[in-house]
Amino acid sequence: MGDVALQNRDKVLRLEAEVAKLPQVVLEVRHHFAPGMYARELTIPAGVTLTGKIHRHAHLNIVSKGSIAVMTEEGVKVITAPATFVSPPGTKRAGYALEDTVWTTIHPTQETDLAAIEAEVIAPDFPSIEGPR
Image (cartoon, rainbow, N blue to C red; front, side):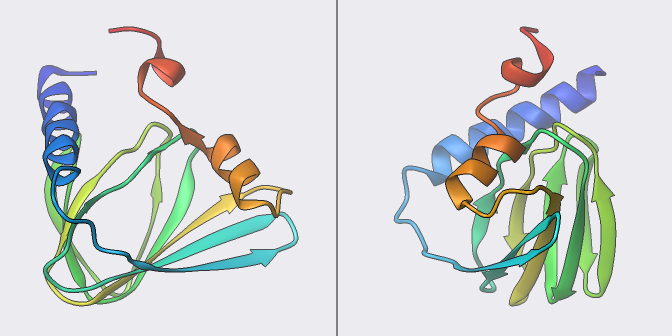
């Protein structure tokens, strides 16, 4: 991973630490299940800053409503609905909703228990999936 990517990752992690100190917004989450699939649909009100978790595997993303500025290791980009894309393993983002936004992630899994799904698809930190830097 290049220096710029690591710097951007560190920015996301620092932002997450600062946002955690602020009053938290409870976001609307809907869970959808189909054979071999789990979809997590998140509604993000305009003006909300948030960070995502580190995903262990590649997964689909669908932004079906709104517009959101997103910071990843590749830099900042604005995603405006409709948008569908694949995130690679190890992805962690920070976002700022420019408009009310609906973002759905879709993960392959046989699980239907939310805690088991999180343990399967979410990494607690980067060293757990990459080893120490």
